[in-house]
Image (tube, rainbow, N blue to C red; front, side, top):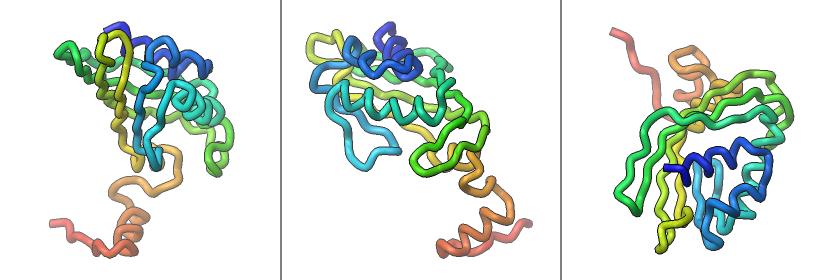
Length: 156
């Protein structure tokens, strides 16, 4: 679906106005990094600008077929880039990060633009790739889980 291709391209474009042509004026957007949903293409563009600052080489690549019933669409993709600048208080790590994402969207009533969009991705894994959180299965992760009250699991 070209509309989702264009939406993903907007995330890699570095142009906050790129969302205007693919999103309805009253678009509603959510992802795991947001405390509350965003309203409008300009808000999505401002959100994307934070990504572009931290990852100036960011790009979004399609990873599978789009699934659609004509009104709703699901689109698997991956976001790739190198963490070169400070991002939300996290100093540049120089690490290359790959985050798999699924965009789930509803089209506006005329089915011409995206109206409701949710992005699903693993924030914990992204933080691990940046070195902010400990790697899965290591001593650091076990210590973190203990601090959170999960205890240690014995390996058999």
